[in-house]
Image 1 (cartoon, helix red, strand yellow):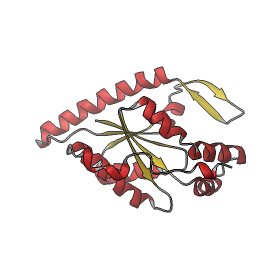
Image 2 (cartoon, one colour):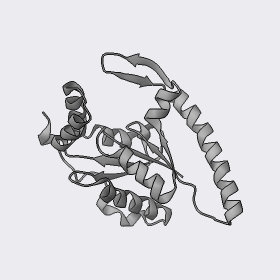
Image 3 (cartoon, helix red, strand yellow):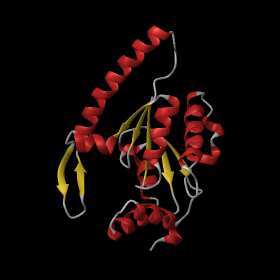
Length: 196
């Protein structure tokens, strides 16, 4: 099963993904790193200090990674006699363009700004990301691209606390109990008043 962990930069995707890897042993593809390492982009935007991802190249490369992972999982299951679901997490602010199931991590924009300041982001990038979070940009895109969308508020919470929510969502999906995940149905967070 392929699950996206997406959200505006600074919402906790990488921290939670590392914990998922460690605690659950699930494969995590750090998509932004993969894009840069394997040059899966069409151009470099010098002004914004970023790259323009080539989604076709990314999908092609991920297909290969997932096939390899599927083979490794099948071999491990054969040796251990396990019948567990193979879980792969795609971690990126672009994950919702690739997966059918996505968990969108959210953060109150003023807190998000503080997190991005600590990372050394430029004022322009901080404001751009805070505004995107204020208007639910990634959440709206997730609805457009994905079949199942869940939302987790990371405001004032540690990565470990957020991890508990993410694990619960995935475990309930695996158990077929999605109807019990009402607290993660998008729409409860409204930060439009925090637009700079």
